[in-house]
Image 1 (cartoon, rainbow, N blue to C red):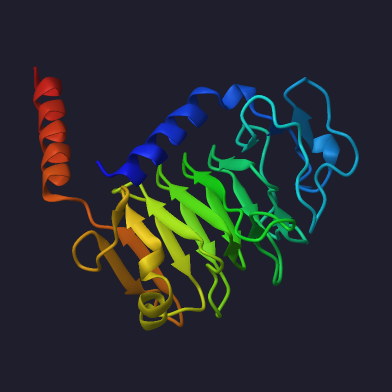
Image 2 (image 1 turned 90 degrees about the horizontal axis):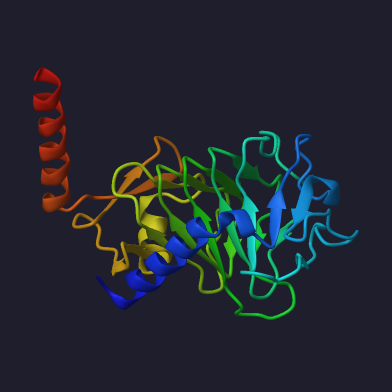
Amino acid sequence: MTKKHLIHFVAFSAITATSCQAALTWRGTNNTFFQESNWQENSGGAPAAGTVDPNTNISASTAPDNLILFDNSLGGTSSNGVGGNVDLGVGNSLQIGGALLLKTTATFGLRGSTAIAGSTANVYLLGAASANFQFGREIDFILSGASTLTLRGGNDSLPNSSTVDLLDLFGSQVVFTAEDVAAFTSEHLSKFSVNGAPAVIGTNLSVVSNGGSGSIVTAIPEPSSTALIGLAGLALMLRRRK
């Protein structure tokens, strides 16, 4: 396990263990991301006006873990998306889960911060989550649980040192709708890792055309991982036969 993978694993474990104690938790049902009444601070009440606005750093209380949790059974944003860039703010992380969709409209994307250039934010996609943005700027994406990240931009949709780490070897994917295999390879390959290891096409990473002008990126399981899955399935079959 590489150092980077270890850091991501520890952070991922900490987030899943403390998800009920998020600094800011989505509680909305009307699909409006930029509406404070749809959110709840860790103290139990709705955040103050101006806490969650488009093109403005999210200024939620940082206690206890700087986590913005977009993951519960009440519903995500509509398939039409929300207008305005989502800016996480300095020090905040975002977890999207529960098979929810977070999408921005038109040319809007997800950004680490409007205040400090180079201040990357961690964004975790898990539990069959879907995220759909024009771009992800100053973001470290970590995907697991058969999640999908869609990036619509055709001119470097992962700018400003953004990265993607695929932790899920059997289902998570990144879809570039306007950048083909050649564009991905030249612009984004160096930004990708698989379980913390540098991505190598044909070794631990698969990149194929989406049938149009885009590309689809997935991890390639290690032979040992595939064998373990097969043995687990065989064991389950034998158990059912008893």
